[in-house]
Amino acid sequence: MRLDLREIINIPGSGVSFDYEPDLSNTSYGSVKGVKSPSRAAGSIRNSAGVLRFDADVDAVLLCTCARCLKDFEYPVSLRIQTMLTESEQDEEDPDVFLLEGDFADVDDIIVTDFILNLDQRFLCSEDCKGLCEKCGADLNNGPCSCKLNTDPRLAVLGQLLENE
Image (cartoon, rainbow, N blue to C red; front, side, top):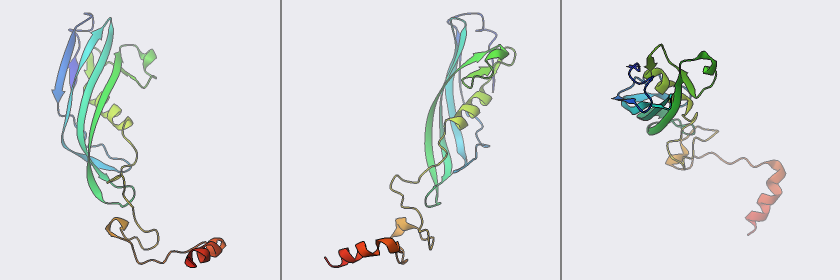
């Protein structure tokens, strides 16, 4: 989505609002397999004393794979994106500043870029996920597996002390 900013670029205090469904379908990396449709992005671009400020709230549901037990699950995300827009290329290296395309702002580019940069790399299906057994691969959330614990031979003497009690 491209917003025409000709009306607000030279008028401090003015702004333009937006509310739409961004295309986050190509958002897949790490534990994130994709984004469930529809997503929602609502916000505004305001001219504050000659500085164009971009504010948006993005709500989406991620389709993730748990980093411990490898189960697929849905993870709701609400992100607040705040950045500035500029016409000069000297600020282009700043990750919190986006370059205008003439008198237009590419809202999709801003939202997708900030959305990806602000997400975690790993997701868990629950805080107390026990994961998989490192030997047999059983899901420990469903109960203990039948694997015998291997004790470090250097600690075997300590194990004998516990058996005597």
